[in-house]
Image (cartoon, rainbow, N blue to C red; front, side, top):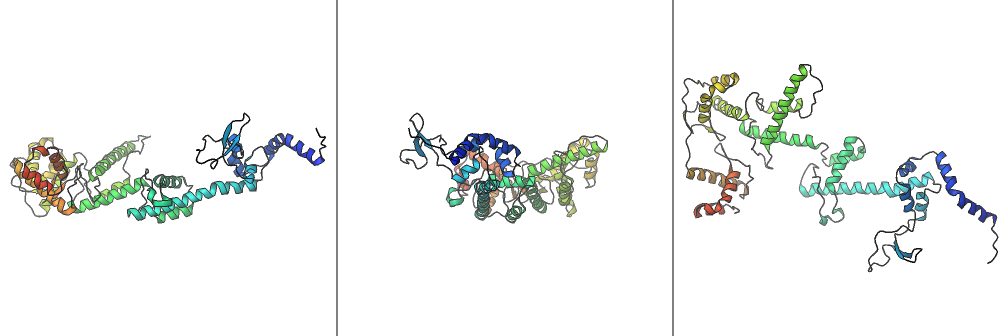
Length: 430
């Protein structure tokens, strides 16, 4: 074996190699911690070391038709073939290897190139996807469903989790960590920062439209209103429950009770907004159906009308007011004093008001009434795909057209040929 004499430089290099781990550990302990170094140290050091190892074992063998394109095939110590991922650059390996000293400036540059820039690219892709979503849907607000993913045919923007992306931006904004420039950019796109607040404003707009048409804000819980089929009845039912809880808790707090949560209460500002539309939207002491009929009778009398003389004489928004008055007189003793006063102020005297009975319609009359509603709906919408809860206004009477269509479809085999053909002509889907 040839005799090789080590030069001073090679000896120094050898000594440096054998002592490097101990020296670097000592130096790291005393070296000031750079922010990027501290961030990387939060991860598993073994994982970071593996990033710089060009012999990192791949968990999956490449297919035969790809050859070594996705990895490099080498033999391990036992002579077995293994798959390797492409090695990282020499500069990156030097930065990531924790067993060696690192230049903070080089590490900062690496983090910027490998972490920050891709994050910016993700941001821009989200903005572009959001812009196209607004254009494709025609919406003016960036209210994207959480599960929404862009279609594949959007090219480079396809399969982007836009719903998750928007939810993340909203979460960063709430935490105060979203950059001001990004807040402005999203606001210009119509970003909905608070989904709950936006939903309330949308519901409030529907309530204004309903009150303008009907003269009150007292729909039944099944009422759906607006072009988008907004469940107005449920919206107001929930609001009344929240208002009731707020009033009850206010009394408890006024009595000195402490520790009462505000959860589930209707805020004062929202209560005032509904009061401006209709002060009687949330009656206290009796149910909403009674309040609705009273308000309809009040409006009829104030418009110069007389108390109904018999069944069918005054039917407003589906309510036969003569029949309703009869019911109130029959159960007069069960009414609270405030209800009795309101009825007496309209001229209803339980001792003199004649009780009337409702006139029952024949099955043929009911069918024709519902067919009138169906023809009216078809003429307006161009189809007969009626939502189950939809009620159609026919001459002031609210008919349950959705229920009629659903029930008729269910008993289609019992219909006469004439009735079936009449519905088929309107586009009925059997």
